Length: 126
Length: 126
Length: 126
Length: 126
Image (cartoon, rainbow over all chains, first blue to last red; front, side):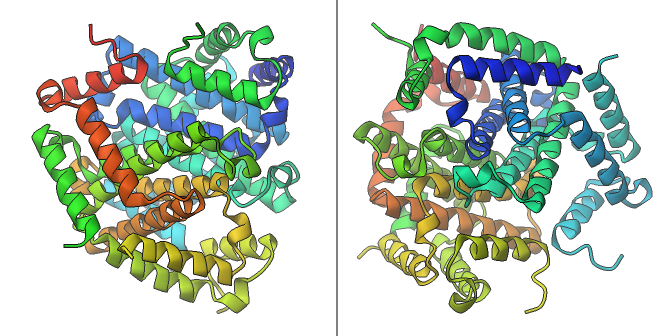
């Protein structure tokens, strides 16, 4: 069994042991996931981008804690929706490769943003 | 090399090919992560918990897309902060086992919530 | 001067007194706003919808605290981007009235969601 | 009647006309609020702080749209929980003035962050 599937089984047992499965609807888990993602954002909100690349040991340790929490809730959602995470990620990487061809998006932040925004609305003019 | 490390390398190459690494500070990536987490929340916001457990194929497919996006940005952050995801998750599971002992938290939603809230403030329990 | 403009001035003074204005770029404030919004989500994540409509005094007081935090950061962003909040809201309500005509969207959750999703992608066929 | 109370009444009518009130539990509305807050984050995620202070007209217009959406959902939650927004904000500003006394927190980003973090855990004040 692959690593992530092992962790999913471990987390399911953890929830079962505590009778927490009843709270773990996909809806609720998505809320918990976004809360943990925001706790990671909180680690960086008043730092400059450069500071966020040079964390102190205490800052790094706090960030790792939140990263793990996000990963845990994401795997819980994957369990509840019967999603194989590696498959999902590999499919998305392929999609993104088509959506963002190197020769079209390579380069400046400006292009990057505009491409991104165009894509949100209607992907016109292709 | 383990699976997640392989994906991290793949995603790094994807960013390098597009010269996007310049935008991928931990600060910016945490923002992108939370945006993707919210797009998953959006899938469920007007559904009941029960409906969120019984998605249509179209709803499920949309949710899987967002789950993959969250996973991808989380791995990008892990790359930028030199975090091994499996180690981080395994350490967190151990921490949680100590923090939420089965005999103390098992049971009703009420206990679950109260325990959670007490823990946020000061864990007083006296 | 209208009420919200008064509060914006008060909050600006609060930041100035503490020399915090240097941290209050729109980018950083948007992060802080989303963190506060998630703290409100956290109040409700393990509650049923019905429980969220019947909060205990302690739960309500915690929620009000987060609501105020969201409002405060939202007004800070409005200050930084020179936005008059009442104008912005009134314009948006007009937009929404056109976007969601009563006879088209009135009714079931299903219609509500589908309309919402269609609107995200291409707003076709009007 | 004060301005915000007028808007709350308007938004209630908007929801009633569309029979949307059934979806507007505080739980669901908190989800929608955080989704809108993230859409504002999305406006800034790849911009530098400086760029976020110098938006193009199109970028500003997009940001204003999201700001209005956050305000609208926040007022919906206030309606559902019977919260007077001005009172809530004024009380919070008073709390914050006590929590962040000028002479203690004025100055560097470092102090600002440390104070903030200390406060999260136990307000030890060493």
